Length: 163
Image (cartoon, rainbow, N blue to C red; front, side, top):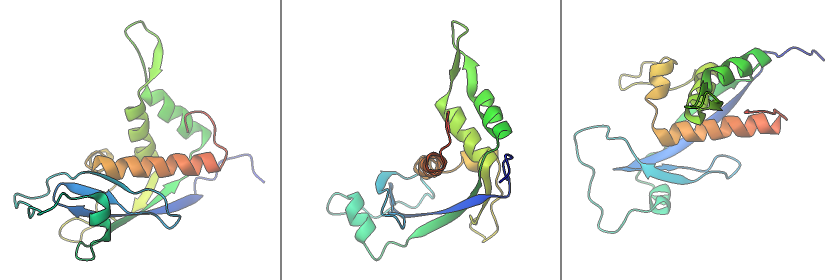
């Protein structure tokens, strides 16, 4: 067993969701975790159909006419250097000069540094590159679930600290 982090060691997660108008519903993963709903970003100028009854996450999730969208993301496990760089990048002094961790910056850096690949495609079926801009353009609900899954994986491996 090596004491050095293996940067080739990765794990995959597939995120599935449905979008209906202004509602995005995260579908359970293969372990039955996570069902959540949030307003979706407006993707086009075409208005969504107005439902007769209030839209619920359960109704959207169970509607077979609404297509399931998905992305598979491959994360790499962080090394000690990664953890230090991410933590340092997310730490800034407050108004009294005391260092504090900005959790949003921490999560952005975790995604930026640790996503190794994904299968996202644009409207023309071209691969979407992984960079700060494309990560920043993710729907907040999608990004939050990816961060939660990354945290969960790190916790299951006994990672300590902010990871």
